[in-house]
Amino acid sequence: MKTWDKVLEDANEFISFLEKGDFFNSSFKYKNDYYVITDASLGIDYTTNDSFDDFDEWETVTDTPDVFPKDFIWNDRIKYKLSKNNYFEFENKEFNGVKEKWIYGEACILTELMRRDIGIILQCYANDYFPEIWGRILEVYLNNGFPCGWNGHWPDGRLVVFSNE
Image (cartoon, rainbow, N blue to C red):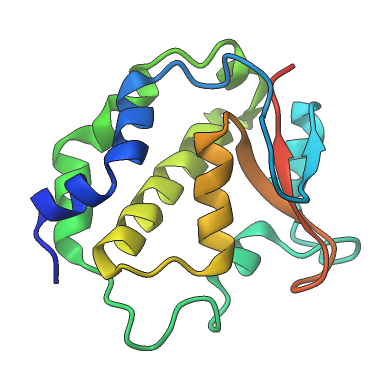
């Protein structure tokens, strides 16, 4: 298993993105076939709706048993280091008005999901393995979008990306 320093080195581009912290300061720049939305309330529906009628629940798509191989190691050291450095203080950075659009109940669901995604992305770096869906999620973040759901029923459909317009 990699050391924390090696994970940070390998994840340098992603860490720089988190530390820069000027999130969603322009529209999403995409290369792949994504379902891009600009309505935060629609994004919240994709993120929280678990009816499975029109599309699969977001966490089910990203965490299905076949996403990560059996030998994938979930390293507690990664969780500890992220907690210790408060996830690179990403929540204290500039979100260009997006956090206020993503309030669900009393919480900002965007930052809750970003925290989860940061942890999983760093676990992928630690394992030198990115399942296809997580490689795309990383690509979305690095291109100024927020991955927030799946349009369709897995594996058919497309990744839903919120773009701040």
